[in-house]
Amino acid sequence: MDYQKIRNKKHYVYDDIDEFRVHNPNTEVKKDWKTANEGDWVYTDDGRIVQLLKVSSNIKHHNDRKNYKYADGWVRTIVGTFIINKTSTMDSDFTKHPNRYTFSGTKPQSTKERKNITNKEKMFATNVAVGMGIVKSYMDAFDSDDTIKSKKKAVMLIKQDRVMREIEKSVMDIAKNMGLDHEYVLGKLKLLADNSEDDNIVLQSAKEIGKIIGTTGNTVKQKELGMIGMFQGFSPQQLEEAKRPLLEAREEE
Image (cartoon, rainbow, N blue to C red; front, side, top):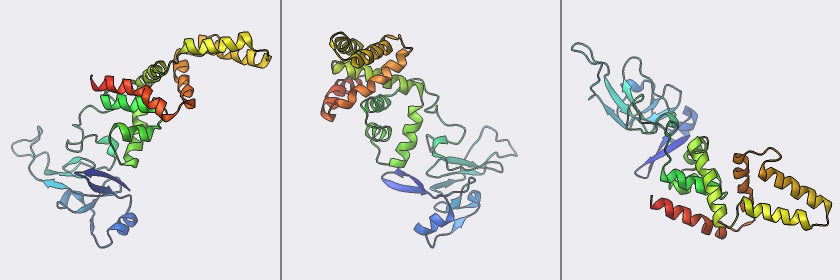
């Protein structure tokens, strides 16, 4: 079962009739959504159950002709808006409908296609960089209280190149705000390697130095992402103070 909110009211998508009956024991489910009325619960073409929030016969299409009408109307569910004709189908996949108020196939540029990062995505990236976790990071950045939706959206975002680049940038910026950079780490490791009387410490320090300067094959990207681990010894208050300048700067953009 999934749901999304409209004006703080939850609208559900049920996985099957058994799940639907638990919450709606006496409500009929129409088999043909194309002939159902506004407010009816119907089966989608991918086998789930949704409510028709809006039904209209008022539609014009560029394929209309004098003696031919492309569509008989349209319906809207919590998932999306769908044209009614002989070949049209209705699905229940939220990820295919970033805007429920546009017809399927005419949706705006998707999150996956977009190249420019938004301010909310930047905040998400900063949250991830300090180790908040991707779901909590999304809920905080996008002001969401829907854990299920947030998990799906966060997983999708974390796969986008523009978001990963921003996470890497945030890691480096936060590290610098805390006085941590590669020079700092190299200096500390060199101090250990030069002054320790323990051969194991000298060897491990030398290995770590090799990773940072690239001797042992680490890429720049791996080095930058590896710095996330450096934040583990800091308190939430310290991390919050370190990321605050980034958030303030982004609010001014």
